[in-house]
Amino acid sequence: MKYTTKAAAKSTVKITIKFDAQEWKDAQYQAYVKTRGKFAINGFRKGKAPKNVIENVYGKSVFYEDALNTLFGDNYGKIIEKEAKKFTVVGDPEASVDKLDDEGVTLVAVVPVKPEVKISSYKGMKIKQIAYTVNDADVDAEIARLLDRNARKVEVTDRAAQNGDTVNIDFCGSIAGVKFDGGEAQGYDLVLGSGSFIPGFEDQVVGMSIGESKDVNVTFPENYQAEELKGKPAVFAVKLNAISGKELPELTDEFVKDATGSETVAAYKEKTKAKLQEQADRRSNDATENSILDAIAANTEVEIPQAMIETEIDAQVQRFEYQLMYQGLKLQEYLDFLKTTMEEFRKNFAEQAEKNVKNQLIISHLIAEENIVATEEEVDAKVAAQAAEVEKTAEEYKKNMDPRQFDYIRNDIIVTKLFNFLKENNEMFVEESK
Image 1 (cartoon, helix red, strand yellow):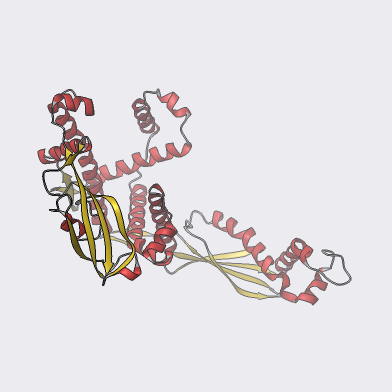
Image 2 (image 1 turned 90 degrees about the horizontal axis):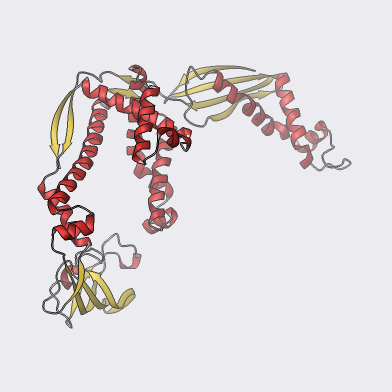
């Protein structure tokens, strides 16, 4: 077997593999030995017919496919391993037969490989640094959510319904005077302002009093899931049976201690602001790192093979599928609801996937360029910090660690060091955001 490699278009490598006449003959014999048991030939027990007899009955090429698969399967991996220093394969090969006769076989494999990254500049640039700040209004909003979570539902009898109330209603919908499926219910609890019903419905229930009936006029959205209702005007006969409002607890030291464990309102506010600022700092750091990558990407040339983009799309679709599972949904059900195909759905991720792959390639290139590594001391320190968070010694914590966790920690340290390097070697100017 002899082979050659040659750089091809779109970050691929063309591997040409030549097998001589004897190698081709041997491969066909291997295919014969492997598959002869499935051939039934008159005058021979099954699996005992000679190779030439089977070829005479089924054709000379009867063993070609299995022989070709054997030649490729036995040699492709060895070639890739041997050429590992020259290129890194990032996807499956596209194999084809270039030549086939009694003189031998020539196979061609076009393989997607990790592309060359050319960065014209990544130091000495002026790059936007994002800073998210926390103010008193943010703390007040968090307190409002705390009070709302601990609110008591109370019956309302002395006023009309308003946003935020839970109303109990009977309703019956019709289009051009004809009722439609799913448009009728009795004793239905609806939170006004929640957006649970089609646009305009809840707004018209606001202001109704207990015992009042009225017609609510709405139009179904053009993208409504029921085909027969899309864009249709409808009338709902609505009767309001009851109103429930929320009674918020008083913000006192006693309430805060019971609800959160903080001793006083002031202490809770201080703790809340610190927690929100910690979250804001993480957002700031992520946004700044994206800003750095955007600036470098603008100075980067790289030809990304489609195989890498498809792999990233696979990962994004899988993450989306997991999110649906937490909501009790299946991806196919979701696609059926949207009336779309998987192929069309995947297109939604293509642009972001390409950007993600480009950023990953930039990070990998710069780590190698600047020879950034994680020392064992740095890894041990990170492990010790994680162990302390769960009140264990580093030795105890390590016993239950998967090797992949060490890889993750090591990679996290390296990437953090890279971005620290980039921040130090570029002019960062602050832009505050909310």
